[in-house]
Length: 195
Ligand SMILES: NC(=O)c1ccc[n+]([C@@H]2O[C@H](COP(=O)([O-])OP(=O)(O)OC[C@H]3O[C@@H](n4cnc5c(N)ncnc54)[C@H](OP(=O)(O)O)[C@@H]3O)[C@@H](O)[C@H]2O)c1
Image (tube, rainbow, N blue to C red; front, side, top):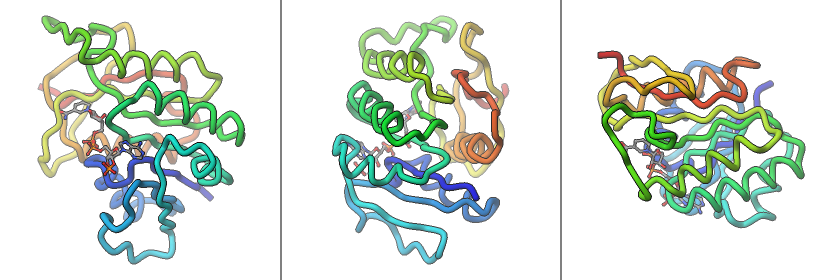
């Protein structure tokens, strides 16, 4: 049984990932989001919807109970979100975290310096990396909405490749990581479309 908690379930990548989880795996999904009415009808007995803010520690801890994987697909104050998620996972003994971040946090993109705009992303990555969790951080390139799964990855310490990646590709990688024990654990991956 693979129980997956999706934080920010109405997000762009998350919506692709939910479709893939339901079509290609037997995972049980908990969809966690601030406004449940935003989700279109989820006609599946493998889906549970929980309304909550990621910063609401009590609701978040309740959502974590019994989960095998937490997949964070959030935008906003990622530093605060990362701190809250790591603490909630530690308290509830959930180990596996997949965390969507951004390219550029290690100044790894050749010819680009993103500066302070990525500070919250950098700090969130540092919080996740200094935890004891089995994390995988994803650092995608600029998103496209192309209907394709076509990606390659780079490890932390390697120069970033490419410029874009489809949301569907990132979702496909999330699903693969979620259902494959040990894959890319404690790694931070750049994700791009091969050029
Ligand atoms: N655009 C790009 O090309 C690009 C490239 C690389 C990385 N990224 C980053 O990748 C990440 C994921 O992208 P995406 O397109 O899937 O994001 P998205 O569509 O903006 O979704 C982010 C989700 O986070 C949720 N959220 C924010 N604060 C929350 C809170 N306190 N509690 C619960 N939910 C909260 C939002 O919920 P609500 O619906 O309630 O607002 C939203 O659904 C983002 O951080 C983005 O910046 C973007």
